[in-house]
Length: 248
Image 1 (cartoon, rainbow, N blue to C red):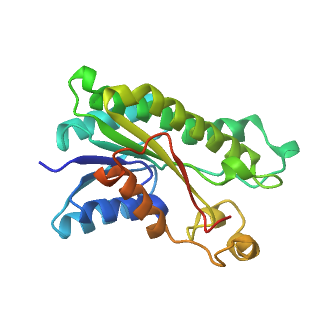
Image 2: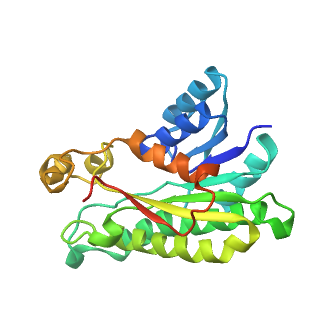
């Protein structure tokens, strides 16, 4: 049987790149989406058409029941989860902190941090060796914003990713003794539509001058690091926060 990977937010961007690469490397992939059903099912069909195995599951990451249903669906259709990539997220709108409403904070924290927390809990319950599981690996897709702070744009987003970094380190230390490695990647300026959806389609162009490597990154470059962290090549790597940012 193929090892089973769940990729949250797998319909586009980094999540889609992770799902495609995982499918090529022999994982059975469950990828989640909220509204982009056609995109998600298209990626699943692409993986299946290339001889892999994939399903797309509609999941609202801020809703506990929806996340629990995701894992139960994967149990039934693919088998016990071997790995999890917590990628689903939202920046929320670009706002200075004096303009950030509680609604914005609730939405961003709910999807980015609450969702990752619930998914980690559900994955750990299935992977942990002290519960009869085989162990496993979790990779959280955080952001360089967790360190840079997001001032003047999205402190709310940066704060959620700071929480994700803490979740990564804490859960790595707690779950290591039961066979589960937990790490994070912290992407920088990556060529996805995240910036346009936040209301700043020119953001990559404006900020690329601050990248020591002199260019933006691609989702595939992030996916390569994620799949390495999931692999046996990273068997002694846990609680790591790895910038994928060209030095920014």
